[in-house]
Length: 317
Image 1 (cartoon, helix red, strand yellow):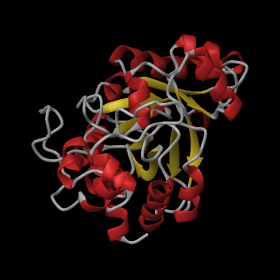
Image 2: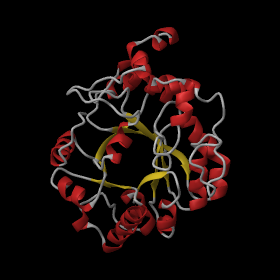
Image 3: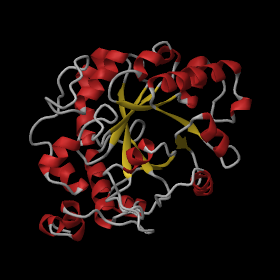
C-alpha cells in the first residue's frame, strides 16, 4: 500500500469520523485498547510479538488485548518495528473495532539509574515513534531514572503539567509516522501521545519491571512516578537476583522470599492505583482477578476467554 493509498483508505476516513465497529457492534472509544479496558477495570491479556510486516499482519487477529514486542534481549531494530506496526494497520481493524491491537515494547535500556536513562532516553522515543502504544521499562530500580522515561514520552507543555517530571522531550516533526499508524492527524497524535493515567486522554501505557532486589527497595516510590500505568515483579529475573528458583509458578509454590517480593510490588501498585501484572493460568485466572491482577501474562486463548467470561466483558477480542 502506498502512502497515498494509506491516507485515502477506509480506516483513515473512519478515524476522521465514526470509529470502526467491532464484530458484535462494539464501538471503540480509544486508540489504545489496553487503556480502554483498564479504565473500565477489565483485566487485559497479552501475547509476545517480534519481526516485521508479515508478523504484524498475522498478529492483527491475535486473541490477546496487547502485544509485547520484545527488544530487551532480541534485536533493537526500529525498521522491523515500524514494518510490524504497518502490517497491523494495513490488516486491521481488530474485532473490537480498534485500528490495531495495542503494542508495548521492552527495550535494552534499563532503569538502573538516572545517568543511564538520561543518556538513553532517545531509545524510548524511537520506539514510541514507530507507532507503538507504550514501553515496559526493565530493571526499574530508581525513580529518577523512571522520570526520564516518562519525560521521553511527553511533548513540551503537555497537560497536565507534572513539575516533578520536568519538561517533555518529544520534538516537533516526530508525529508523522506514528500518526499514520494510529490513523489520526498529526495534531491529534500530538495531543494523544501522552502517558495515561497522568493524562486521562493519553494513549501511551508505560510500565515497570520491578524485577530485582535493588528495584524492590524503591517499589513504592517508583510506582508513584506520574505517568506510570502498571508494574510487575519479574519472577524470572527476581529469582536470579535473589538466587532463588524461577518464580513463574503458582503462588503457593513460590519460595517465601519470592512471595514477599511479589507482595511488595503488588502492594505498591495497589497503593498508587496502577495495574499489577502477573502470570495467570486457566486454573487460577479467576482467583488472580479476584486478588486484583489486571494485566495477565502467559495466558493461553482458553485462559483469556475464561477470564473474559468471568468479568462479563463486552468488548470482543
